[in-house]
Length: 291
Image (cartoon, rainbow, N blue to C red):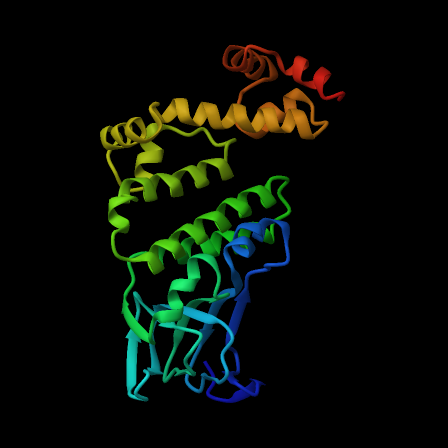
């Protein structure tokens, strides 16, 4: 990365060849983020020369270091370092000074001092190990990918990612006691369900699903049974049929096209499964919604 730099604003110096991917919070899929009080968010890759100095700050900032080292000043103006896997809280009541001396990747959020984030009003600038940085980073990438996609269901899928971003950010900020409410098992299943929903046409097997979250098939069965009171394949079938029902209500796609979209071999197979699950046929759905 080049060492030459440019002024992005009076408060930010950004090295040339740096990159920044901002979450489009003005779009429909970003509604969960807007409702929770996220003002701005994004991923930033920079190098030597990157520097931020903000005064009269009107927002909280939470920065997750994905790779590299981030140098920052604490409330006593002492120079501190946050490493990969750590996060920094920079509350609204403090000036924000931080910079890079080498390659650095950040995932960051600016937060209104409302609702869940009001508790940051009483915090001081601090850094510590992050429990949820991988999940936040993974879901931010998913949101960026889906919000820029042309798939018919991209808004819906991106909306799921936005909701997960809010949940993991809440866990990170709530900190103490979260283990009592949310388990590692639930976190992995949420991720798996998002991936399945993205690709319902795929011929999912229990083995593939288990490998996706690095557990055995027996362990996956136990996890799904405990959380959803179903088997993994029952859960996939329910997701497929729910998506088929949505497409029947909201589109004019043929039953054959829908069956292919949600992973059934034929319109007949989908119709049979649909009738068994909902006790109505796809044709009944179409008649009721006037399509």
